[in-house]
Image (cartoon, rainbow over all chains, first blue to last red; front, side, top):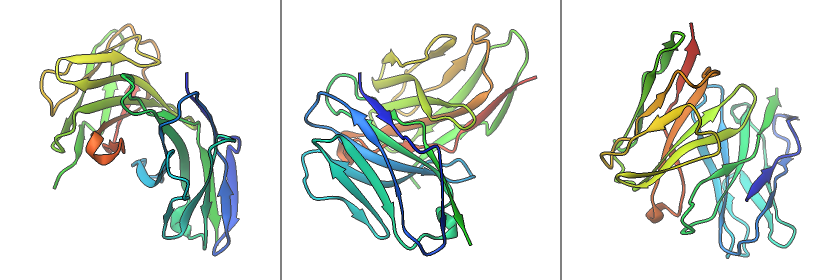
Length: 116
Length: 113
């Protein structure tokens, strides 16, 4: 079974600084997708960034980028120029497509606080 | 606008009562999911459905039931057998055309009276 581990329950960063959230996962599959979702106090789940396992290039979305290390099964999220609106729970997630069990598995989350 | 609609936003259950949470999507997605979120915790999968008239148990299906009679709808019933139903419930959908990205509803907070 696939598992996703986020080892940092809480983190804080000063506004305008950079922070990295860690995520590791366990799978024997070669083809899969990885995601970072953000859940602000409104509790709406918002997709931050997505990475296909077959792509070696790390995904980037504006201030958000990932460091995808497939061999190490690591998928960290870097937030540059942190903003107050980045304060939220961040969840790392894994899905193995077309396997007959296409369910998204989530980590337990990291609570990020951006301080002014 | 396309999206996922969950209702109600807040729901209260009395002891021994069954309650049903609604989830409707107009994204033409084949797959739909129900997740449970407890305070400070991640999301745990209750049930999911890849196609109409078919669904599978997730990790915590006991005390819950679902149906998938229409592509657009995937209601979740929290039965009296679920002894600790207080939680935030999230519905989601996905399509292979979106590379498995899940679209989420805004959630239902269920509390026990």
